[in-house]
Amino acid sequence: MSQSAVREAGGPSALTVRRLEHGDIAQPDFVTFGKLDQALQWMPGSAGRAFQGGEPTPISEDDGPTATAAAREEVAHNRARPAQPVTAFEHGVVLRTDALAELTRNGRALDALPDDLADDVQAGISELRYTIDRLTRAWIIRLAESFRKEGNLADLVIALDDHLRSNPSQGTTEDIDDLRYLRWLAGYYQNPSDEERERYERRFARSQ
Image 1 (cartoon, helix red, strand yellow):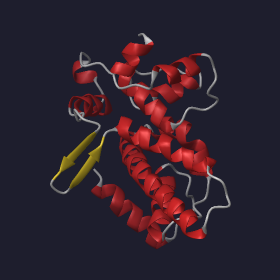
Image 2: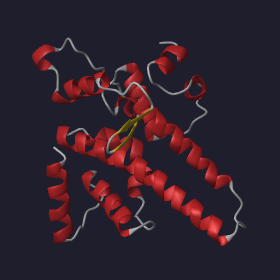
Image 3: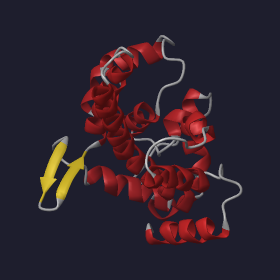
Image 4: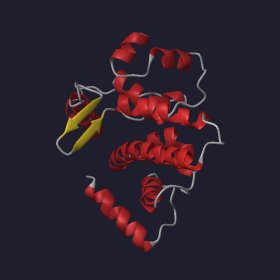
């Protein structure tokens, strides 16, 4: 599949694909892996597994009764992919994964700003970072819930290992709880309190 074909199918940019092919990206982020899975019609997590030297699992609509529930769900999801990167509804806005990737990429530019900015500017930048993190985390959590349900969470962990090993330390109480829930989904939060465990189990059950 050509670089332009990958891009047109919803994958990373041609520049990113070239950098991947040349080994210029030491560890692609989860957004890049997700876009590669989508463009190449692979099961979620396949790009991350292939990057580690494993074999990707293609999605096939011809598998009939032997197709996994995850494959059928992913095919249905791809069919329902919004036509526009940003789609407005009466009660909110839906961001397509490529729009989320662009937002995340632009957010990284904040890290290049000098440290001697005025306090109110620094506070505004921090809030913007948290907002971008919340949007990205909501998508990651939804993926993690799907992977946990299908028993394929190890594939997601490959792409998110460093993120999951970091203990939550910043943001609001809700931000920290979301991070702990994500780590619990992936099996990285080993000692939640009884209250947390019950709450996370209820939250996971509601996601099904």
